[in-house]
Image (cartoon, rainbow, N blue to C red):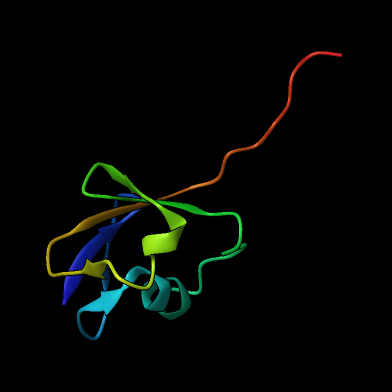
Length: 69
């Protein structure tokens, strides 16, 4: 089944939860990633409940602090 992940078309074997998809796609720094599914930020507490389906668009976002000293 095909989804878009960070703008690239990727193949996953079946519908799966966000938590499962992070493992399946070998997403780095899983503990820091924020997932946006079809334009909506998904709360981390929902990663094991929300399912990724055919044609979904997923973005992996990493927020980093910084600025001038």
